[in-house]
Length: 186
Image (cartoon, rainbow, N blue to C red; front, side):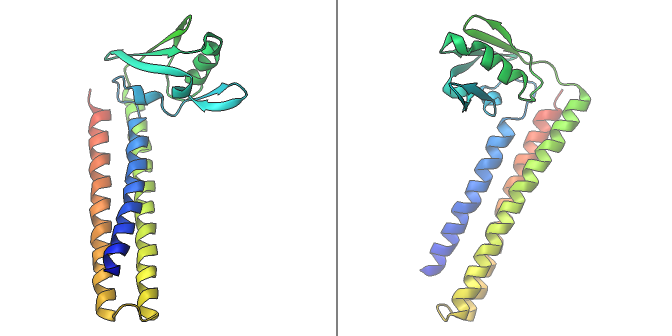
């Protein structure tokens, strides 16, 4: 029963790394508007940095346009500035409390750059999964050394942990391939 708990805990931790990768990949532009595109934007509001979604509502009225509806009119300039400086290559247009953000076409050079960024995110997720695997194997070796499990159980658990790691690395590679296809689509 202890082996199930170890593998379950490792699966949960690896899932966390995969979720982070999904969120990072959603933030990468693909030429189509997505409300999640502005998730990384931090706005200086009321004396501190806040996520954009805490000071405004983001909607997608058209495939190539985002509309940001700022709740407090006095925050419009700060939101506009935060979007411009977020490094997303966007040029917002402010109209009172409404900020329109057209999504420009991506040129070939920018597409290649985005695929490299996606690859960095994927590699960071692979490192997380490998670190979780290392922790799990160390934990199993310690249990065997302490006499909590037999050597056969230790080998089986290590095999299960490696299988789990391979499964998550494959999921990461699939997510990366899917994002690359999305980015490079003309």
